[in-house]
Length: 505
Ligand SMILES: [Cu+2]
Image 1 (cartoon, rainbow, N blue to C red):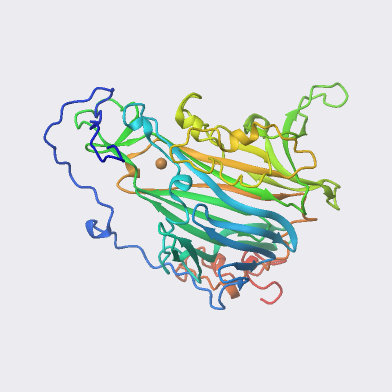
Image 2: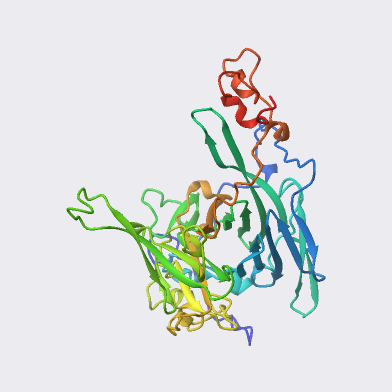
C-alpha cells in the first residue's frame, strides 16, 4: 500500500513450499486447532501448591528519592531504578557495601533476524526495543502469577502517541527468591557441615511484543554477583507451509503443527554496561589461560599453563574464545586488592553466541550493528545508548555500536562502555508450540579480586529452626533419621547437624 495515496500497490503471495515458487491461491484447508489457554486443555490434577512465604516480610527496603525514582537497599547492595519507553527497566548507581560498581545498566537493544531468504520473509528482523520499546510494551505484573512471595511493585510513567503522560502500573516487580545452595563445606574430620543458601533479589519486567514475550531480570546475590537474565517465551512467529511437506525437513524452519512453519531465527540481546568499578577510570581487559612450552627445568612434564592479560586499548568488537578460556574483565587499575595486589575488577560471564548469519552486505547485518561480536567496547560518548542506533525502524546501518567502535577511540585512561551480546539461534521444536517453554540466558557480572575474601562468608547459615522444612518420610523409613534435621549423635556431630543450631542440639 502507498501510505500517502492509500492505493493498493501489490499483493505478495507467500511461498509455502521448500523453494521460492509461489502457488496460485487455493481454498483454505482447515487445520486442527492448537490452543495454549487452560480452558482448552485437560489439566493435570496431581500438582500440589508450592507457596513462598516470608513470615517477617522481605529483606529489602525501598526509598522514594523522587516521585518516580526508587532507591533499593538489599544485603549491602544499593541502587536506583528507572524506567523508560525504550529500554524499560534501567539501573543506576549500583554499589555493594558502599563501593561503586556500575554507573548505568540497561538492555540497549534486541534483534531477531529470520533465516527465510524468500520474498517477503527476507524483511523479517525485529528490533523489539528500537522499533517498539521495552517500556511501552511492559506487562502489568500480577501478584501470585508473575512473581511469587512478598512482592514490591514499581509503576512507570511514559508518554503516549499524543504526548500525554500515561501511568504504566506494576511494570517492575521486586522480590527475593531462594536459588539453591551458595556455599557449603563439611569438615570431614568433625563431620560438621556449614551450608549457606543463595538468596537472590530479583527485579523483573516482562514485555509482550505481539507474538513474543521476554522476561527480563536483574538478579543480585549475597556474594557480590549481579546477573542479567533474559527468558524468551510466548508464541513463535509462524508462517503457512504446505501440508504435504513433512517427509523432508524444511530448509528454513520447523513444521510445528500441520500447516504451520516456525522459521529459523536468531535472538540477539545487547546489554549496555557503563561501569564504575571502585570509582571511575576503568579499563577493559581479557585474560586467557594458555599452555606454557615444555622446559626441562620448569615444565618437564608438559602440564603447565598460565594466564595472560591483554588490555583493550582502542574501541572495537571482540569475541569469546573457549579454547583459551578468554574472559573479559572490567578493572580499576588504580585500586589494588589488599590480599594479592591485583587491580580490583568484575568479570563478565557471557554465554557463547553464534554471530549473525546474514552476510555482510545484507540489511540484517548492516542494521543490527551489535550482532557480530559478543563484546563491543566503546569510549563513552553522550547519546550513545542504543546498540542498534537511535532509529532502528527502516535503518540502513551506519549508526550503532559497530560504527562507534570503528572510530578506534583510545581507551587509555578513558571512560569505557561495555556492550555484551548474547542470544540463541532458535531452531524451533514441536515442543515450542503452541506456546514456548522459556529459553533462559544469563550474563553474570562477578567480582574478581574485588573483595578480600568470599563476600558471603557472613551470611547466616541455613537452619531448620528458620526454614521449617518438613520431612515426607514415614516413621520407620530407613532414611528418616537423616532427614529430620536434628542430631544423629555420634562423635563430633553428625550429618544431621548441618542444618540445626550448632551446639544447641
Ligand atoms: Cu525464538
